[in-house]
Image (cartoon, rainbow, N blue to C red):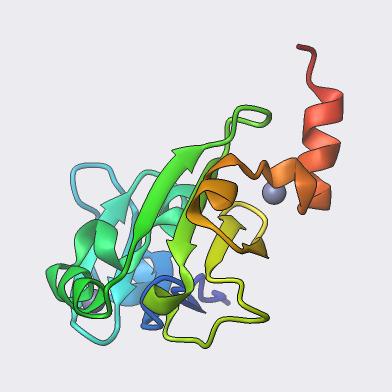
Length: 148
Ligand SMILES: [Zn+2]
Ligand SMILES: [Zn+2]
């Protein structure tokens, strides 16, 4: 009995659906030892990763030209950075790029990609300086565990 490893998620950045799974479960051959695949369902493009964590982190615009183009068309501003406190990837994006209406004038979003948590801010500057520990409980736990 084999259980499929394939999971679906919706990229917050582009709104497109991504499938993540083991190459075998997606009917693909591993690529040079890379056995995990992120698939853009909308554009039929894919990228290989070393492990599931990495495959889950990949966003459409990271590997899919069509996703990149549609993000640009939506005047997307997407900035990737790494959290000082936890070393985990953080994504800052303008709400416009997500295709949703600003909430209470808050036009920017900071997201913790690892834990799938996010917060809205009013300005880009604020979004860029917001630490994930301010809104992500799991990041807070991580930061308090690791020695400075
Ligand atoms: Zn795509
Ligand atoms: Zn987090």
